Image (tube, rainbow, N blue to C red; front, side, top):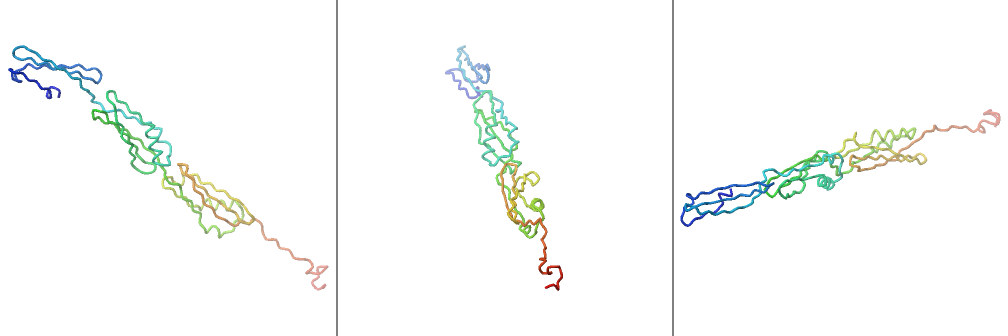
Length: 232
């Protein structure tokens, strides 16, 4: 490349009849190229230039540990991706492109690309998990139509019937807690669902709880003083 670009001119000897010699020496990524031209009269001229030689792209490494947590936003995931990326190049300065995220929920691919001054590009990627929305919790209103015999029975009914939906986390992967507060015959039951990213949503319903049977009593006065209905 350097020889093709070199300008060699002699006032008497044509370029094709000049004796042109090229040699080089490599130190690290610096290549020193020396061109010597000799004309037919034996007169010589020498020039040299140093160029960069870098056949290898930058090495991009991403800490795979950042794939383990669930992130609440893509911003959190990008910040973790930047912190977990290391770029190395033995010869040139590198430019790191903006992180790229492709995919949804638990299967988002995060990519980092670095390009050195010779145009060589290196890339690495990692799978990230992002859950940007809290779960929805719905307790069927029909549960309020039943009178439960105990607090435990009312809580069990809510736990079995509550509808929990999340855009990323499956029901079996979420923590669903049921709590209650009793006031006379009314029981306020609250179901709370927490997804894998730590987002929580609650829903409540008031149920009837009656654990005691009715009390039936007949006043003895209506039977007379001796229990004789004719004794009045």
